[in-house]
Image 1 (tube, helix red, strand yellow):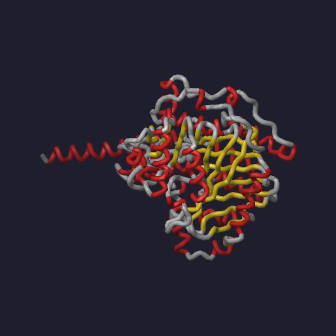
Image 2 (cartoon, helix red, strand yellow):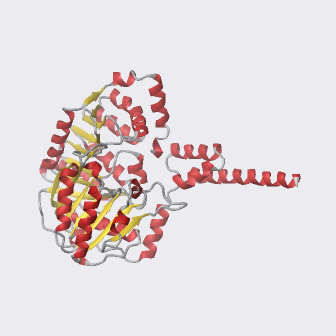
Image 3 (cartoon, rainbow, N blue to C red):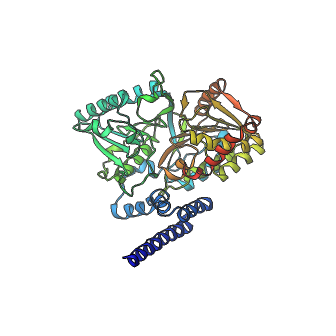
Length: 475
């Protein structure tokens, strides 16, 4: 019996060592970022059993291979109307001609076209966004397609559930995609509330043993009758109603009209297909869309599958093209080295860069990691401001008061590497000026963060922030 114990113990240690070596070798070969590879290798080798389990559960991007298999097995992709797919990219007006290199970059890295004739309406907080969204749902005659990360079961969520159910009762085709992880933020869930209605519901990547804890669908898209779109950073929930009791999350959403709405629809249709919904090939989901304004807009779908890193390239390209000003508003700021280098390079060229962050973050560990990067930017002249409470989830970027980027993505690894995001790049002076105006109003109420403040942090705070920084690739 004693000998068998020794044999069993030896086999156990050998199995653990083999698992650790196999996992470390997989990270060494497949991780593109050497810092990420080193971190996972050390985790796998230093923490028996749990290190490899953590790596295979959190560190492996299975989406890329799954997406390739999905494309191979699914047959024909959902249709894209010829008027959108085959139209040549729009020409930039004279005052924006200097951004043609940025336009060319976007043209090469994404499949969508830069489309003219769009109109974008900023909607501040739930008080402005939700009534407009609900009114569109109530007026729907053909289809309602909603994709969101979080769909709370509170009063606001129930108002949306009621509107969606009413639309389905009228004979409107109503489809809803909610991320499986985001759904867990509240009870009852959207699926439970919609049960028994005519609404077709799908989870994005259902959670299960061995499931995808990263790689979430962070997109926020609503398309009504294929003609009216909404997108931005706002989920569905009363937390975005700033007149309600705390906790409150301030945010900015956008109503979208014009030809680019077809690309919001296309993104939803592809996600619906991926979520094992029926393939939507009816041309009525893509009606002819008249021009509604003067903005040139392009949809940018980003994710860890076929669209990997494309949004990141566009952001770096925008920084390299900036001549005068760059304004960045984001709730989560955990930059990688290329982004830091691009920001510093632009600042050293004389570009006035303004970065606006929340004073108090809803995720303290993210704020700790973020603070560890600020001194490097402050040293080179980047101006950084802290917005007062409540927590501000707004995100946008404006270059030279000419080019804007809006949507669901934050400036952190989770958005730029791990999640599925949806953004719009917009070439329009009036729209950029409107976003700049909102930022200037915010700065009047904000506190500027100084280099002296960063240097004066207590040693304990510096150690805490630096320790959080070590986990930046996974936050």
